[in-house]
Length: 121
Image (cartoon, rainbow, N blue to C red; front, side, top):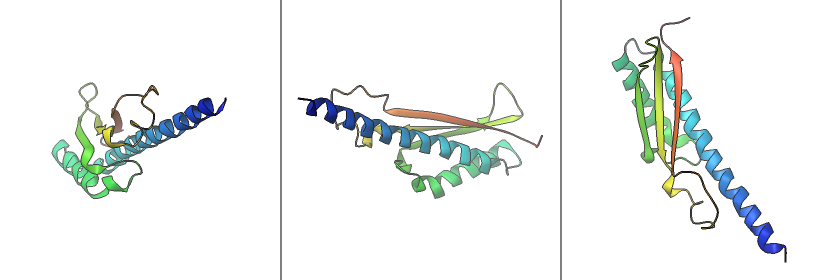
């Protein structure tokens, strides 16, 4: 009698665990790419460093397919002393969406960003 409820609970924990793992990986990619970008002397060089980092290291994060990542790296419009790396991940291929169709799930696109100060202190 309790088995269906228990199975729903376990499947929900697994599904959300995978989603949170992918979400954390996307945030870590944004943070690591921003830290890599700080070595650039100007916005163009920083963008090149971010793109190279994603290309070389994007597949090394759990639950993330590097081909589904979209990256936008630019100087902050609000504060010119900051550089912003925004990462969007199309999470449609995660195995959680068909795990249990009636389970309410978050959006299929994961958006994360990281800011880093340019030019030292």
